[in-house]
Amino acid sequence: MLKTRLIPTLLLRNGSLVKTKKFKSFNYIGDPANTLRIFNELEVDEITVLDISSSMKDSLQDLKCLKEIAEECFMPLSYGGGIDTLDKAKQIFDIGFEKIVINTHAVNKPELITEIASIYGSQAVIVSIDYKTNFLGKKTVRTYCGNKNTHLDPILWAKEVEKFGAGEILLTSIDNEGTWSGFDYDMISQISEKITLPLIAHGGAGSLNHISKVINECGASAVALGSMVVYQKKDYGVLINFPDQDKIKEILK
Image (cartoon, rainbow, N blue to C red; front, side, top):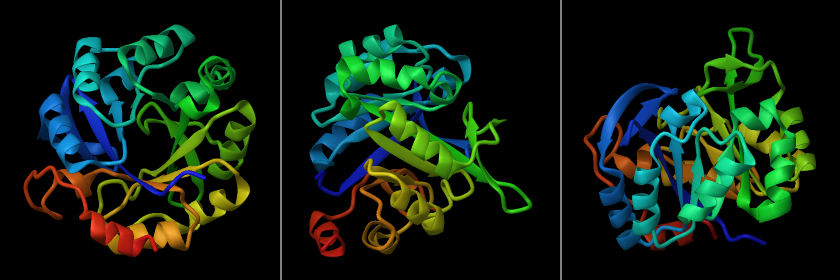
């Protein structure tokens, strides 16, 4: 059984770290390598790096930057963005990343999940599911950084992902991302009941209470943190930080 993890999730765009709100409004955060050094000192559980530029162009845009990140990081490290072949996954593993995150090409070519898992193990494959709610209240899976509507149902897709051999699912509510308003608790609960994989909740974390609820009441195995770990607080400036370990232990009891 995996311990409950709180995972800083960092967004790369053209070699710099940025933060978004609802997958839009790119705000500059800082230099990736320097940020990783701070998280090393804060002794975080693991780090996820998602490259927006690579995701949109179906290519690995900045391997030099990724090498620098891997060299600075002393905890488990995941990367997502532009991975559409086994060879590209191999490049990421060879650099020093322990896990890869696939989103768009899990939908386009689900056998890629199986292919990578068969060589590197399912524990090395995270499938990212981004979803958005339309004006009628229907939730559908989105790819290409939220720009393409696949019309897939997130719950049914999560079940399929498990069959293809994924080791974890990173579930992101686009509507909640960067808002500090809390998670989509209902969707997280529904998916956690339908799968046996570890489920990483992402999108909306703004307080320790939000984290406590999604772990203790909704069945999430881990939480991906964005705004909470790069800003002082909502509507304040950049400050790389991580929740106090004693407070984390308290809410996860």
